[in-house]
Amino acid sequence: MQVPAPFEYERATSVDHAIGLLERLGSSARLVAGGHSLLPMMKLRLANFEYLIDINGLRDELGYLRIGSGEIRIGALTRHGELLESDELAAAFPIFRDAERVIADPVVRNWGTLGGSLCQADPSEDLSAVCTTLDARCVIRGPRGERIVPMTEFHHGPYETAVGDGEILTEIRFPVRPRGGSAFEKVERRAGDWAVVSAGAAVWLDENGRITDARVGLAAVGPNTTALPAVAAALRGREPSERLYEAAASIAARGCRPDTDMRGSVEYKRHLAGELTKRALRRSVERALERRS
Image (cartoon, rainbow, N blue to C red):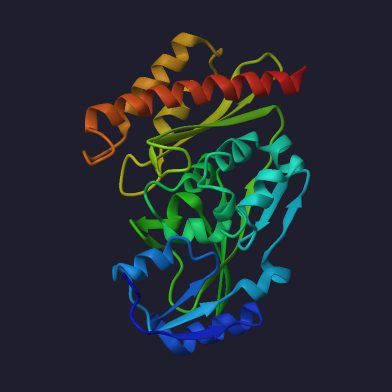
């Protein structure tokens, strides 16, 4: 049986208490919420920490979903199941419900958190692609106060983030713009598995149905979630069409950096990156047009 190395356990009673513990214990400590990614790594001795700080008791401070007219704010301890079930969130960003439906299983979704998913920084993690697509901003709190980091700068490498020693991710913010649509597509080896490749897309249209802006985020095709500004540049000001989606797919396939592994070859993953980008863009435009009608 695989078991983790011995560790001490602390239970935080507030965000400030958690920050104080992290500051005192330093890099030997790690926060744990759902633990579905961290604990298996500890059992395999791929991650070893002397202290685990349980922050599940901070749900009153960090477990919320606040829908505003111009911005949506989600606390870092909001569960996957809550994101899946929120009709208000699905109305603003249907990409969330698309993604949550294919993340793991009900047990994981009822315990795992948005903040934990982002802080794990797994290159195949689905919600990182969603947050990159939606141009999210991450609120990080530490001993010296708060700072806001755009999602494109949040991940520094596989399993590395902008959250420093003594800091905690507290909130993720999403700008809301009119006449938008979004969608998520994923290929996995079996239901609920890590992605072979996943793609998120979001588009915004003008009154005439032309694309004013667009974003695409890919997962599992590089060391971190891949944002594709070249796709956005190719779509802006254009009339949606199958030819345009094909052009965007070609850019996505060329712009990612997958590796060959047990889930597939580089060529296969590039093909999926293009195909899933095309599907996600098509569905995003359809949803944006439905909101105009």
